[in-house]
Length: 259
Image: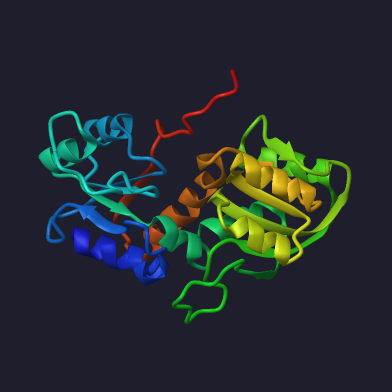
């Protein structure tokens, strides 16, 4: 099996044409013709993840966030890109292509909070040939007290704490999810009648604006809201590429802890 086979499978799951135009997605380092037998999945390709990949002889890393984002002028010893290229480890990032894809990051988060199949993207991508493709998700929940919803989110995301802004005593039946940073999706979710928005993070003034609009915000920290998507992605790659060994990083984690 070649890196090109892995790339094709990933682009079938999350077509790169649907990524945000500011994003850097796809094969970021490596030779498409290189053989691949072992692939490591992670949210962030840190030096610790590279060390893990080297120690356990992985041929490629699929990192949700692209570690190559802005143009770089140097590739020197100690940098992630240098170490990957030196070790012959390929690097692929799906990022917002996976966010937009059916069954991708936002659908996994929507499933986690109990959103029914009555859901839609908060904002559709410019190219949208498939139903359900786009950024964020907004839809219906079976009516639930916000406190119970918060407990569900913490349990399913595996976190002990979340940040809560806006009304805290209410029953929720319409929710929105924005994996990672809510950004401009927050205003669209408010306009579309979301009673609660579940995200990784929002800016301070955005939280104030949502609270003034009567919308509750639940923030789990950035990568905590994305991490659940790794296992479904691993399973889909395993089905598409039988015989390929796939594992999720044991050292990849959100950089923040509760002190």
